[in-house]
Image (tube, rainbow, N blue to C red; front, side):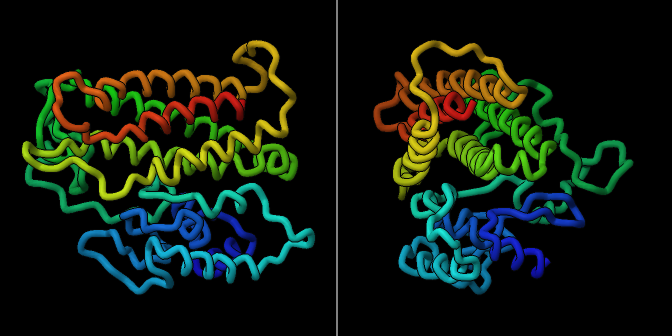
Length: 310
């Protein structure tokens, strides 16, 4: 594993494939480009799992310390000097990229908790099963433990974001199926960008699900979407737009399979944005919502990103 990881970062790669599981694992280089610990027990976290509750390990840099992060990034880049002295698009975006979390498929899976009593139902397996029977009556729990009907606006918006993440995953899978020299040149940094987008969508789902209890402040200590993720999307869009001809007419959602599927991402993204509006700007709330406005900005910009990529 360490040899695979060293080879990946020496090539300035954000990911590599874990042989035993087939999972796509983020490298130390990818985490450093994002600047802070994401809060998960990532295999190659350079921040020592600083934001993981109850878990710590030795890290090479401090989470959020830009000077340390830049120094370590320079060390890694020095392992692979470029003849032309120019960074790739993914490297140019490294200083503004950040992450709070990553999808389960990106990281070494965290060992599941011991299954609750009687959760296995008929006793045919001792493993933790995906059903709890707690939602059979039409309600479900938020991260805070509060229960709501499954057609509540919070679950509606979480469902739309989850659907969007899934259709983005389809595009990513379609690109991986074409993995050869020609497709690598054609798609460039798109696979890594889509992985980052899926991670951000996981973040949004978690933010929506963390409805604070009454009397508890819902203010975020730092708004990473406003500071990092929205500007990063805009940077990607600007870079691609600069390479495209001037747009003078409407486009049909067609072309290649990947392009058509990206238009599906765009339209589902618009729906997810619409469903989150009532959560971000509730009519019956005196103070700010627990979901920051920057999440709506991110989804608004994300649909533009899908349009540009398509």
